[in-house]
Image 1 (cartoon, helix red, strand yellow):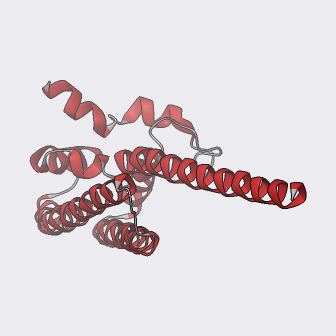
Image 2: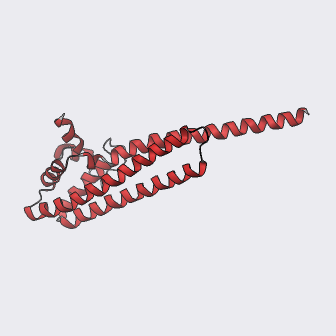
Image 3: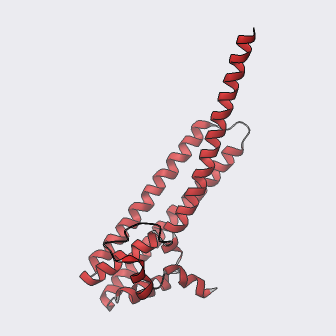
Length: 186
């Protein structure tokens, strides 16, 4: 009888441990995802006309380049906004499901898959945007574009070996960080 009780008690502790581990993983996933989305969506958070001005100034776009840029920038804005709104809606659905007394693990798994698919779509959209910009640019502008996206991907400078030995100092000397555009408006 005592052996059976201790096995039951051991199984209960294992289940509790696994449950707490899953909850901790989900919470850290939300935290990481929120931080990452903030960095990823910084480019889309710059108001349209400021982003156009930012790229125009930093890349020294001519009038023809600027017109082409404005067209696909508008498309990017709309697509990225749609995707990020859907991600946000799925996050709320996930939180509601987690809060339910009788949560459905298969529904949580489905929501996680949807969020992952949407993140993939957002990355594809951003990649397409970058490649359109790159096709628009001359060789000097391509180098500058690379530096700009590199810093936007890592505004805190945490990535080692910043692009081909260029260093963050070059960014600080020659370009304004996009986030600063918003800060000056407030």
